[in-house]
Amino acid sequence: MDQTADFDAEKCIQEVTVESGNEIGLVGMQIRMDHKLKQVVITQPKHVERIIEKFQVTKGAPTPALGKLMGDNIDSPLLADKADYMSKYAMLMYMSQRTYPEICPAVIKLSNMYNKATKKIQKKTIRVVEYIYGCKDTHKLVLQPKSLKLISVADASYAEHTDGKSHSGGVVGFESDVSCYFGFVSSKQPVVAKSAGEAELIAHNKIGDLVEWAREMLKELRYPQQKVPMYVDSTCAMQMMKQGTGSFKRAKHIKV
Image (cartoon, rainbow, N blue to C red):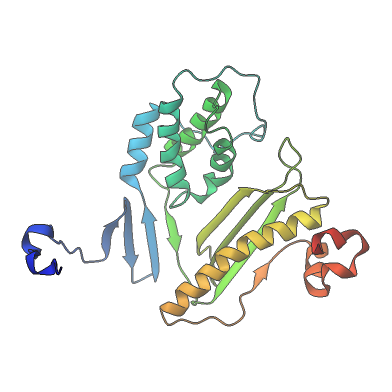
């Protein structure tokens, strides 16, 4: 039976609005195009105010975390209202993936305690919000590419977590004289690396997924990429990538 005959577009489709100009709103973000400086500035002022109001923070902090961030703090009492904490935390996670990439390590670490948050974990979460409060009037994500050539950078913090696992970090963006990254990775590694070089390879593999996504996206937009430079600061990892892990006696398990 053909049901399209009874379809009434005017009743089913809501009013469509079009926003144009050098500044538009998109999914809770404000995107401003500066043609003179050839840059795009992205902010989330309304979302920032909602977070500050939700957490009731009234002071700023110079950094989103202190040196004891990676401790699990399991000796601290559990929060009474876990649902409220999870709701607040989700707001921070959204912001870290949009305009505040520098809070990613703290937010990702806190996600490990998502369902069993303690009072110490809550204190670390408030520290992130205090950082956001402290720079809310000046913070912005600026994209100013020199070209549309993709580049990526990956790094690892070896054995950073209390269970011996390392932490991966990396960015993907365009070639630029300043910072011009639009993709960010910060995550706890799924396996225990036996060396710093191995941890670097795991981090590089993780950022590689984002590089492949960006290549495909730009190909669809008719900006095909050739070789994408992937920067790493580990000589050991670079040698293993060039020569293959089978060439190293202590790295055969990586090949397996």
